[in-house]
Image 1 (spheres, rainbow, N blue to C red):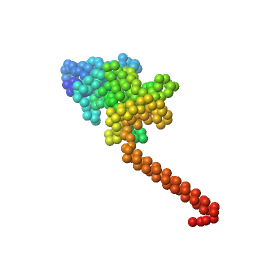
Image 2: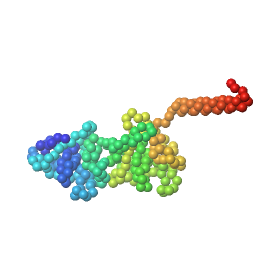
Image 3: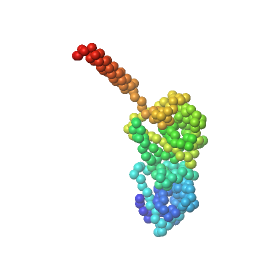
Image 4: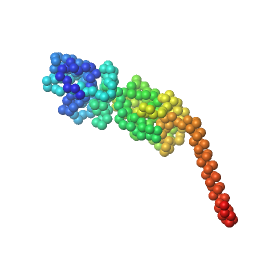
Length: 288
């Protein structure tokens, strides 16, 4: 971080750090009105509240600063920053959001998302390798063919994203769904209401270098299983999504596996026949 000594050192799109309700706080600068070298007002987008303990909402508001009194810093990130107009556009797209969370979505996370793009919350190990988990905060984060996680009948649930509509605030997913909590699970394509300002949505993506299907192939594979009713341990929505996302064994690999299985079967049969012959000869008093 760099301490600001002149209002002119601040630029639109910068992330500033300042005191808010007595605590260190971050915001995106979207407009600057300079009065003199040390005084001016900054329009800032941040997770604000009317009091320290009220529910926070992303808001855009003007704040006056006197650098003789207030300490203001500009924050930098290791990742490459986006262009200033893009940063402002991204920040404004989230105004009105009410998803503040101390562990993964406070002002620091918001400004990082606006300044450098989505960040990895954690990795999720699978039999195919590790997947990166992102919280989705803007429609620009979504990618068709990805695994998304949402709330379904009150629990976390996964599906393959096939479409999304920012205007109507909907996502379309293929998943193991049902018409009620206790009815038969069926792979279906559902269009669900999704308000990113208030609802939680996560997305899993492969790390670089992982062998996986292209988005169009992921969706194609998902659609070939529509109507399936084979939900069970090992074939739930999460398992279904992984099988769509990752590349299956090639025919040659399958052939090799089948040949190996056949060879094992032949060897076992030969071994059993040999044991049976030995027993028969032993009973007859004949030894080899």
